Amino acid sequence: MRLLDGKALAATITERLADEIEAFKAAHAVVPGLAVVLVGDDPASHAYVKMKESACKRAGVYSVVHKFPEDTPHDRIRQTVEMINDNPNLHGLLVQLPLPGHMDTLDLIDRIAPSKDVDGFHPFNFGKLFAGLETFAPCTPLGVMRLLEEYDIDPKGKDAVVVGASNIVGKPMAALLLNAGATVDICHIFTRDLAEHTQKADIVLVGVGKPGLITADMIREGAVVIDIGINRLEDGRLVGDVDYEAVAPKCSAITPVPGGVGPMTIAMLLQNTLAAARNFVTKPDA
Ligand code: GUN
View 1 (cartoon, helix red, strand yellow):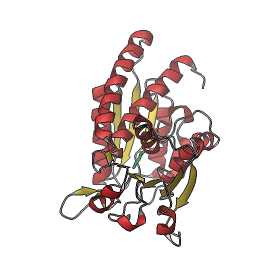
View 2: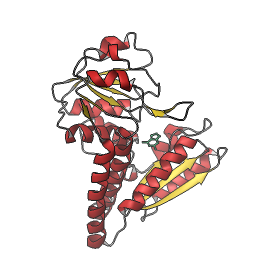
View 3: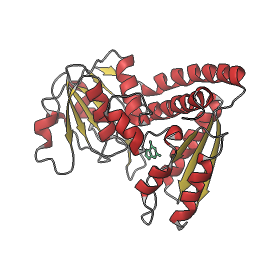
View 4: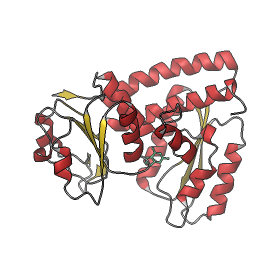
């Protein structure tokens, strides 16, 4: 069984990006800039945003976080998004999700300039992704593809099952796998018999936020298992959605949690931010 070490790979990618960013700054006298909008007190969101900020610092990306209290009116956030859209020093913009319940998430995502949408959540970029065109792909699924590539796991011709159909993870994950030539099932909360799907898969990818959802009997001998879930147990431990101890011995390769997909997400955010800054200098009207 191979352990897919996202932490080590993300560190290597970040080092390489830091060099590229330095060269980009020297060539264009432009510092890649990322704006993050964070609303409310969700501790996980605050932790993720801190990790994003420190990764930017390590790689030489300028970052600014706009923090707002939970009860901020929707229009205030909309104005902030529009202000960042118009700021030429900020090339990437993301709104940390989930937003408080009174906000219209899709409306806010729709307001992000597609050229700054480093999360790849805007419907324009989402559509391009599904059409197989070059665009910003969401960072978590993009990180999974990079991890598979690094370990020479080619999805072409494989049966892949994506468990979870969110706009952030499941749907773009399925699109990237499909674009790479896999046959893809997408399972979700209404799927009648989840095990029936996962048992036949060469690659199982799961991101729903349910510890222990994927058990050993649901996985074929020799399968590749990618755990995109992240859950904090009552005893403080971080675990994924896969019963790791039981499943790992059956796999040909598996990602740990933590240290698997999570660090790759942040590395891909840096990569997308550099790409946004590059587009800004080469295609300023895009
Ligand atoms: N919340 C959980 N994952 C993500 C992500 O990749 N981007 C944003 N904006 N919010 C998230």
